[in-house]
Length: 357
Image 1 (cartoon, rainbow, N blue to C red):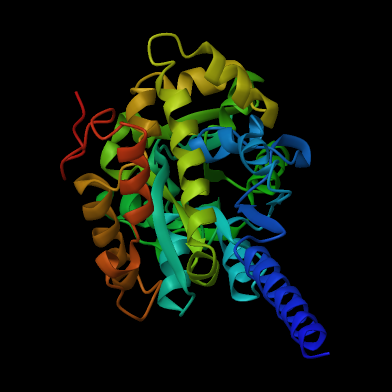
Image 2: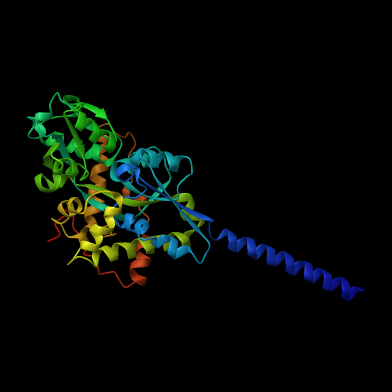
């Protein structure tokens, strides 16, 4: 009787241990990884190009990485761009995202618990487009004009810097808050005099309905825009191993881009799934090394740029609270991945000047 009772107890304990172990294993991985992108493709396409983060999506790399684990990867493309991504973080609806410098700074200053994990979508250019028959020929001609700007995105900080160099401030221009698609439509109907934006505007020029009067990449590369790959502190703390695998896949996406340095046609072709023309990507990106632009390194250039942008955002009244950039960054996953993949020296760390040649 005692032996039977002892056997029953042992079986019961074994079942409890097994149940607890199973629950622990399940707790070590999420059922879904939620990734947000600040923007959409042409015609509301759920796809964008131009970065290692977009390659993750366009090539299905995360889905492949986590397929055997039964982990779903859910992508959200938000027309509201950076501000919409911040709102998603605030409501616990996103785990990772590409996020521009200014919106990420605004979110962190406002108390969002995010961490910067790697660089992505760096060195973005800013264009000014005007109607084809406009007499506006440069930045200084924008004084008093109706101009579209997507407020809260990383272009707003770039605009403030561009204006300051030309002796202007936001108050000197009649800015109207518009997303990219709305701004392009307003240019066509001439409801605005000009618009700040990205390479999307090159298509309007090619159609003969607009002209480009400014491009920061050629006119003043000090005003390039940058993004990083950001993660939720809650997700990172709960699933560090999964976070490391996400970062690893991002690094592999960056390497795929970089490996095409000598012949980048496959990269531009992949990006066209966003609806932006191959020729426009080529024109926008070919003046610089795609390997440099794809670098995931949080090097001196990115670090100094973000620290400067934090101060600039405060100077322009876009944030109120200070941010310790060094404490915001969590580079342990990137460092581990680069070592494991033997890529410590694959990308060259760029110094504060941003010079890469």
